[in-house]
Image (cartoon, rainbow over all chains, first blue to last red; front, side, top):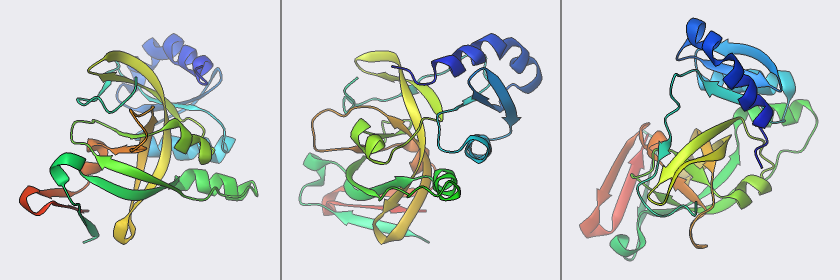
Length: 78
Length: 142
């Protein structure tokens, strides 16, 4: 189950606009609301906790292509 | 310079394992304190330093024990899977000698029960890792 499905959908819907204005920066999204755009990931996360408390929210870098995080070994059971 | 060294009986067979504790990240701790909610106790885990891992990982049980809420979704690729979505959390990693690193940890299950955490290149990028194989010793400095 993806607890951030709504936020990911909001990100996808707004990605063209975000790319135009803020490519490479980090967007903070809660539900269907784009809360703000930040220069780095930790600033966006801190703003999210400051505004919403300890609840799920999405911080995502604004990129044309989302590159996967790579793992060479078989230590992960996925 | 903050650092720690670990010597193991057989570094080649075991890999660079280290006992660490995982804590909620600083912004989480501050949010819990503002809400008057108790901050979860650190969780002791066995971690492996993995130069083949782009990012650091904690297992689902550790995330659950800390009551972590996701702040992101990342897609991971392994030798047996591609683009698997995984939650991401902000945590503090407490190494021996009180070496503390704030990190974004990915939640993913581990193979077997021995390891609950991978220390990836996001953490290694912050310091110096010295692997002295013939002495069964490794050292990490910030």
